[in-house]
Length: 255
Image (cartoon, rainbow, N blue to C red; front, side, top):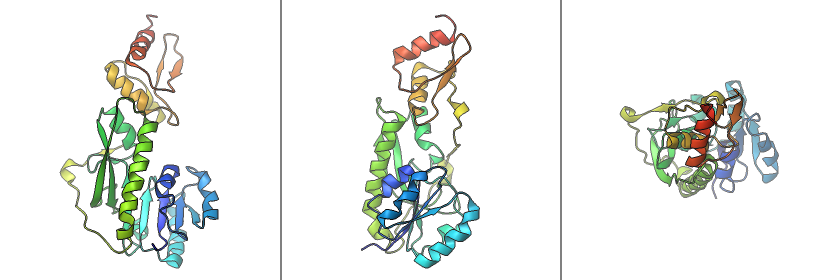
């Protein structure tokens, strides 16, 4: 049986590690991002709230009582200090929703759709002092299909990330496995997107605008534009090319 580990998760991360986390494991979460994690204690887990690096000392004390062989990061938005990710003897791994090193950083799912990519990587790698920069253990590819929105693509990533972690977890808790260093020459960091970044640039092509819209459907803030009356219109669903063209006309004040 796999020994209790320490898992760093948000809501999507919990969907990845659910039923894979051994009983007695610690679930580290940000209450501001995933308040529902506090209810997971009934599953035989030990939830630990983590909002800032100031919580690292208390977390290390909890880890010392558990002595987890392995740490697992799955969709957790905080940068962990070296004292935390170096504590487990078998290291700490991250299930990253992006091909590495080309898609390091934040909101990689959205960026891949916006960039018109045909696929998105799901990468299992060791955590080091860099951001998504540790050696790669394994990578899977997920197709970005024409009908996909950010929601459907996230579900694909969760399912593939879960399968990837399930395949490797028994080996990872036994000791470090072979991993391939990333090429810094091809590395690119993507910034965290803000709601204001959803503004539609009408100089872009119809396909590029469609990609922006489908990348930002709820629960994300949504792409938006100002109509001819100056009112902000937020788009809450995918649009067809024909609908994009109609909005382009409206935004130009020609309706």
